[in-house]
Amino acid sequence: MTVSKNTIGSNIKSRRKNQNLSQEQLASNAGIKYSNLVKIENSLINKPSVHTIYRIAKSLDTTVENLIEAK
Image: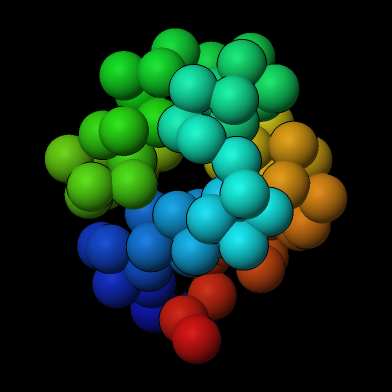
């Protein structure tokens, strides 16, 4: 599967907004730095660690696969 560099960030942002969560809330829930979440959503971090994506996915009640697949 090919993942475009902005797929992960845009998928996270879309799911976060659908759940009416702020970036601060999601970062806190996932136990990651707010600045890292902002960078991931804005494609400044193109390849976040699997651990980070897992924590975000869990906080959004979804799977890693759903975050990395193109829509």
